Image (cartoon, rainbow, N blue to C red; front, side, top):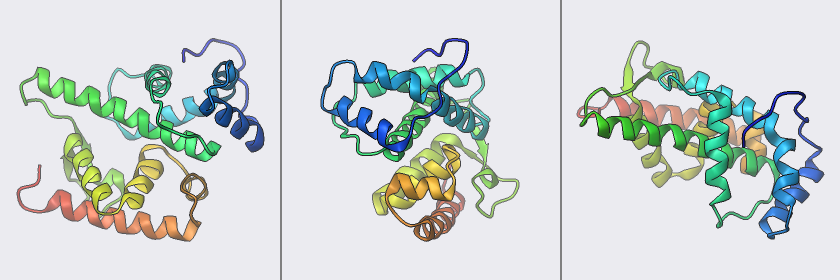
Length: 200
Protein backbone atom coordinates (compact mmCIF):
# COMPACT_ATOMS: atom_id res chain seq x y z
CA UNK A 1 0.00 0.00 0.00
CA UNK A 2 2.13 2.90 -1.22
CA UNK A 3 0.70 6.15 0.06
CA UNK A 4 0.53 8.91 -2.47
CA UNK A 5 1.01 12.58 -1.69
CA UNK A 6 -1.88 14.92 -1.02
CA UNK A 7 -4.76 14.62 1.38
CA UNK A 8 -5.35 11.19 2.95
CA UNK A 9 -8.94 10.31 3.72
CA UNK A 10 -9.98 9.99 7.36
CA UNK A 11 -11.07 6.65 8.74
CA UNK A 12 -14.77 6.26 7.88
CA UNK A 13 -17.47 5.61 10.48
CA UNK A 14 -17.34 2.20 12.22
CA UNK A 15 -20.26 0.81 10.24
CA UNK A 16 -18.87 1.75 6.83
CA UNK A 17 -15.44 0.36 7.52
CA UNK A 18 -16.82 -2.84 9.04
CA UNK A 19 -19.03 -3.32 5.98
CA UNK A 20 -16.04 -3.01 3.64
CA UNK A 21 -13.97 -5.40 5.76
CA UNK A 22 -16.72 -7.99 5.70
CA UNK A 23 -17.13 -7.52 1.96
CA UNK A 24 -13.39 -8.15 1.56
CA UNK A 25 -13.73 -11.34 3.62
CA UNK A 26 -16.57 -12.41 1.35
CA UNK A 27 -14.38 -11.95 -1.71
CA UNK A 28 -16.38 -9.02 -3.03
CA UNK A 29 -14.61 -7.56 -6.05
CA UNK A 30 -13.37 -4.03 -5.49
CA UNK A 31 -13.85 -4.03 -1.71
CA UNK A 32 -10.11 -3.88 -0.98
CA UNK A 33 -9.63 -1.07 -3.50
CA UNK A 34 -12.34 0.93 -1.79
CA UNK A 35 -11.02 0.11 1.67
CA UNK A 36 -7.32 0.89 1.13
CA UNK A 37 -7.43 4.68 0.79
CA UNK A 38 -9.80 4.96 3.75
CA UNK A 39 -7.45 3.34 6.27
CA UNK A 40 -4.09 4.69 5.07
CA UNK A 41 -3.79 7.50 7.60
CA UNK A 42 -4.60 5.29 10.59
CA UNK A 43 -2.19 2.61 9.39
CA UNK A 44 0.58 5.19 9.01
CA UNK A 45 -0.10 6.39 12.55
CA UNK A 46 0.17 2.82 13.85
CA UNK A 47 3.38 2.24 11.86
CA UNK A 48 4.91 5.46 13.22
CA UNK A 49 4.08 4.41 16.80
CA UNK A 50 5.61 0.98 16.30
CA UNK A 51 8.79 2.44 14.80
CA UNK A 52 9.04 4.94 17.67
CA UNK A 53 8.80 2.05 20.15
CA UNK A 54 11.14 -0.18 18.14
CA UNK A 55 14.08 2.23 18.27
CA UNK A 56 16.41 -0.49 16.97
CA UNK A 57 14.54 -0.60 13.62
CA UNK A 58 16.79 1.86 11.80
CA UNK A 59 16.11 2.56 8.15
CA UNK A 60 12.37 1.85 8.22
CA UNK A 61 9.81 4.50 7.33
CA UNK A 62 6.10 4.28 8.27
CA UNK A 63 5.04 4.08 4.62
CA UNK A 64 7.43 1.17 3.96
CA UNK A 65 6.22 -0.72 7.02
CA UNK A 66 2.58 -0.24 6.04
CA UNK A 67 3.37 -1.46 2.53
CA UNK A 68 5.11 -4.64 3.72
CA UNK A 69 2.36 -5.45 6.23
CA UNK A 70 -0.31 -4.80 3.61
CA UNK A 71 1.30 -7.22 1.16
CA UNK A 72 1.21 -9.92 3.86
CA UNK A 73 -2.43 -9.19 4.59
CA UNK A 74 -3.33 -9.61 0.93
CA UNK A 75 -1.87 -13.13 1.05
CA UNK A 76 -3.59 -14.02 4.32
CA UNK A 77 -6.78 -15.88 3.49
CA UNK A 78 -7.70 -17.39 6.87
CA UNK A 79 -8.91 -14.26 8.63
CA UNK A 80 -12.58 -13.33 8.83
CA UNK A 81 -12.86 -9.60 9.41
CA UNK A 82 -15.44 -8.71 12.03
CA UNK A 83 -14.68 -5.13 13.05
CA UNK A 84 -12.38 -2.15 12.53
CA UNK A 85 -10.74 -2.85 15.88
CA UNK A 86 -9.84 -6.38 14.82
CA UNK A 87 -8.46 -5.09 11.50
CA UNK A 88 -6.21 -2.45 13.05
CA UNK A 89 -5.07 -4.83 15.79
CA UNK A 90 -4.17 -7.51 13.24
CA UNK A 91 -2.36 -5.00 11.06
CA UNK A 92 -0.35 -3.71 14.03
CA UNK A 93 0.68 -7.30 14.84
CA UNK A 94 1.60 -7.88 11.19
CA UNK A 95 3.80 -4.75 11.18
CA UNK A 96 5.65 -5.99 14.24
CA UNK A 97 6.20 -9.37 12.62
CA UNK A 98 7.68 -7.63 9.57
CA UNK A 99 10.26 -5.94 11.83
CA UNK A 100 11.00 -9.08 13.82
CA UNK A 101 11.50 -11.09 10.62
CA UNK A 102 13.92 -8.41 9.41
CA UNK A 103 15.82 -8.68 12.70
CA UNK A 104 16.03 -12.47 12.34
CA UNK A 105 17.38 -12.09 8.81
CA UNK A 106 20.02 -9.64 10.01
CA UNK A 107 20.97 -12.01 12.81
CA UNK A 108 21.32 -14.91 10.36
CA UNK A 109 23.44 -12.79 7.99
CA UNK A 110 25.77 -11.92 10.86
CA UNK A 111 25.96 -15.59 11.92
CA UNK A 112 24.47 -14.95 15.32
CA UNK A 113 26.32 -11.73 16.10
CA UNK A 114 25.22 -8.12 16.32
CA UNK A 115 21.90 -8.60 18.13
CA UNK A 116 19.40 -5.73 18.25
CA UNK A 117 18.59 -4.53 21.75
CA UNK A 118 15.69 -2.62 23.25
CA UNK A 119 15.58 -1.10 26.76
CA UNK A 120 13.39 -3.36 28.88
CA UNK A 121 12.06 -0.39 30.83
CA UNK A 122 10.62 0.91 27.53
CA UNK A 123 8.09 -1.91 27.82
CA UNK A 124 7.32 -0.39 31.24
CA UNK A 125 8.40 -3.31 33.36
CA UNK A 126 10.43 -2.66 36.47
CA UNK A 127 13.91 -3.03 34.97
CA UNK A 128 15.50 0.42 34.57
CA UNK A 129 18.70 0.48 32.53
CA UNK A 130 18.46 -3.15 31.39
CA UNK A 131 18.67 -3.86 27.66
CA UNK A 132 17.32 -7.10 26.18
CA UNK A 133 17.72 -8.74 22.80
CA UNK A 134 14.67 -7.83 20.71
CA UNK A 135 14.35 -11.44 19.57
CA UNK A 136 14.45 -12.59 23.21
CA UNK A 137 11.57 -10.19 23.85
CA UNK A 138 9.70 -11.63 20.88
CA UNK A 139 10.29 -15.17 22.15
CA UNK A 140 9.07 -14.16 25.62
CA UNK A 141 5.90 -12.72 24.11
CA UNK A 142 5.37 -15.92 22.13
CA UNK A 143 5.81 -17.94 25.33
CA UNK A 144 3.32 -15.69 27.10
CA UNK A 145 0.85 -16.18 24.24
CA UNK A 146 1.22 -19.94 24.77
CA UNK A 147 0.36 -19.58 28.45
CA UNK A 148 -2.34 -16.91 28.10
CA UNK A 149 -2.89 -15.32 24.65
CA UNK A 150 -4.81 -12.23 25.65
CA UNK A 151 -2.14 -10.52 27.82
CA UNK A 152 0.36 -11.04 25.01
CA UNK A 153 -2.06 -9.39 22.60
CA UNK A 154 -2.50 -6.51 25.03
CA UNK A 155 1.27 -5.92 25.05
CA UNK A 156 1.41 -6.01 21.26
CA UNK A 157 -1.41 -3.49 20.96
CA UNK A 158 -0.56 -1.21 23.89
CA UNK A 159 3.23 -1.04 23.54
CA UNK A 160 4.01 -1.93 19.96
CA UNK A 161 0.82 -0.63 18.36
CA UNK A 162 0.38 2.41 20.60
CA UNK A 163 -3.28 1.59 21.23
CA UNK A 164 -5.05 3.27 24.12
CA UNK A 165 -6.77 1.23 26.84
CA UNK A 166 -10.14 1.81 25.17
CA UNK A 167 -8.85 1.00 21.66
CA UNK A 168 -7.29 -2.22 22.96
CA UNK A 169 -10.52 -3.16 24.71
CA UNK A 170 -12.46 -2.62 21.47
CA UNK A 171 -9.98 -4.64 19.41
CA UNK A 172 -10.07 -7.59 21.82
CA UNK A 173 -13.76 -7.39 22.71
CA UNK A 174 -13.15 -7.00 26.45
CA UNK A 175 -13.61 -4.28 29.07
CA UNK A 176 -11.04 -1.54 29.73
CA UNK A 177 -10.64 -2.93 33.26
CA UNK A 178 -9.69 -6.33 31.82
CA UNK A 179 -7.12 -4.65 29.55
CA UNK A 180 -5.55 -2.87 32.53
CA UNK A 181 -5.34 -6.11 34.50
CA UNK A 182 -3.85 -8.00 31.55
CA UNK A 183 -1.36 -5.18 30.92
CA UNK A 184 -0.10 -5.30 34.50
CA UNK A 185 0.16 -9.08 34.64
CA UNK A 186 1.91 -9.24 31.23
CA UNK A 187 4.55 -6.71 32.25
CA UNK A 188 5.28 -8.63 35.45
CA UNK A 189 5.50 -11.90 33.51
CA UNK A 190 7.89 -10.41 30.92
CA UNK A 191 10.11 -8.97 33.62
CA UNK A 192 10.39 -12.39 35.24
CA UNK A 193 11.12 -14.18 31.95
CA UNK A 194 13.66 -11.68 30.65
CA UNK A 195 15.64 -11.31 33.85
CA UNK A 196 15.80 -14.92 35.06
CA UNK A 197 19.18 -16.71 34.96
CA UNK A 198 20.05 -17.97 31.50
CA UNK A 199 17.79 -15.55 29.64
CA UNK A 200 19.22 -13.76 26.63
